[in-house]
Image (cartoon, rainbow, N blue to C red; front, side):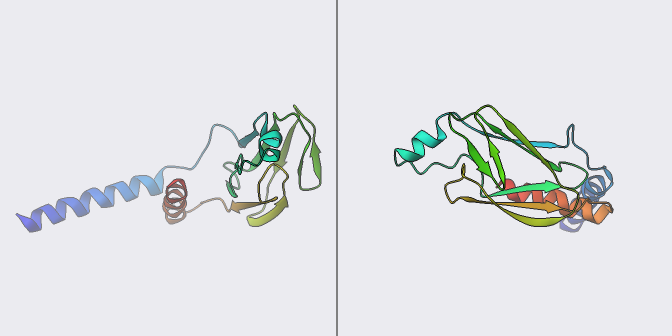
Length: 138
């Protein structure tokens, strides 16, 4: 009974890996949207150590490769060399896999890292990409 159970488990695992490997990677939009909430600056000036944006943002060329920042705060925010006035949005497309560092006034540390992964074109790359994205959510 133990050997048969092991064989069934291995077959199910192999089938699951094949499905994960063969399903193409896609997204409904190339945009990955992040919003700076209203009152962020005031809360930070009041001494709150709030994080409105993650330390690292992960994008993938050809899937989700456009970073969109929306400033809903009452004051201007700076992202890299760009000044976003209240109510403005900023879109930054990425075409090359790399790790990018940006100054960001909406972030408590003043820095943000954008990690852009290459498109997972092969079956094994799709398995690896999906596993990495799942682990990043934990």
